Length: 281
Image (tube, rainbow, N blue to C red; front, side):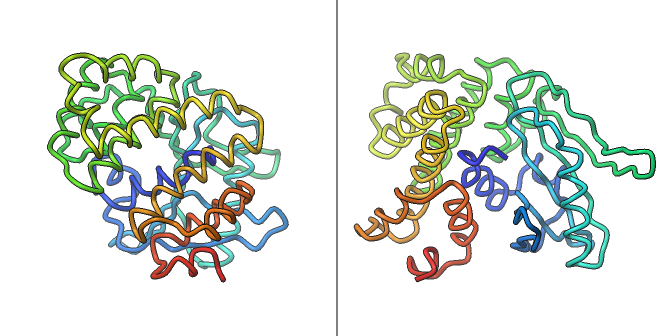
């Protein structure tokens, strides 16, 4: 997955239980945090054990990637080596461009297949009808009418409260950045019927933060430091919701870290009981 989206997407799938989450993972009861002990130190995006005992692995792609089929094979063999069990694999494509990746890796002697779920090709109706705000937001990446998605999501934002409201506002702005609609989203937010949302003490700053991250992503495309900046902004906000304002030493470590290191810290966030556990002090 695009690393600048790592924290957000994991949060969206692991907390609410929506239509898209059930489609991909079934009834997930456990989220194993596994690093594959290979030279490239691969880390799966999302791995869940469902109530039926099946392991389901999902990789989220925001762009077409050459060699994706081989990478899925590497994930499969690594997970099988560790778990000694079959793993159902899915690639969830949420990119702006048309999907060009195949659902298999093939050579004259090997064939490895996996499922592809392409949000671009979904009509989005089930997602918009869902009571789960994550489903409503994912609908922005489908064929659903954009204005309708805005109306549904904005109505849901007004119903939410506290940290969940802030998280939903931030993630919606970030998802808008995937398809390059930051300016359109900002325009819609400034329309008269959304003035109360922008002035809300929680939603206003959260949405502006998400818009800023989307803008930073565009400006920093291909630049590792720009990518890290978007990631640490997201992780900083997630940490502060759990533990309050971050001390200087933690901010210094976060702002100086590489995308790979930040991704590792984000994986620890869900289970960490203290700030020190996240940064492994």
